[in-house]
Image (cartoon, rainbow, N blue to C red; front, side, top):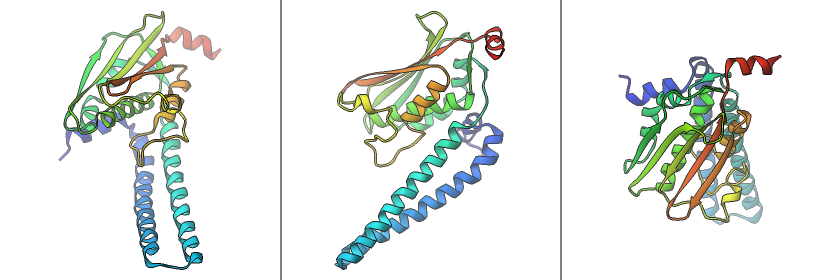
Length: 243
């Protein structure tokens, strides 16, 4: 029986993307499981007082599993960034399509509130990638709240700057320390052992590819706001750019 989350996932992923990527995703999942077994057994071997040479070989095995895991992550990131094609979309309607998914990704103690302006001007975007960006920011917000009670707000509105649309995801979680804030969009930087979603570096890459901009305001112990600004587009503008 199809659940609300299953229905929401179908809205998030284009049908052609599912048919191609789902088998690959399943294979990557299996590979990661096998890598976990290899790494776990390598760690157990360390407990048997083996020779220095054997310890070096165990380290070599662990290094190889870590590298393989990184390759799996890069593969999924690449597939995510290549999915879909550009079209004129209403940002509010696009977020509405994944509302159920967003509420199901957060912790049970967190709530997701939507403040979405109706009748927004269009932006030229890849719908799947925009949904990925919003989903990832909501996942990050939920992780910032941790197991505490908290609130996440997703909002859209016409920007104060002419011909732009703003998207914001706000939480009242743990916030981001000032010394970490400049590095959060660096693909090689992370404070998490395991991640969910596409990562903030990919979020920024998607925003950049859409000629947008992203800024973060955060206060430790009070929360964070990720604000993205997209340029408004019309069919006439697109036709002019294509000439």
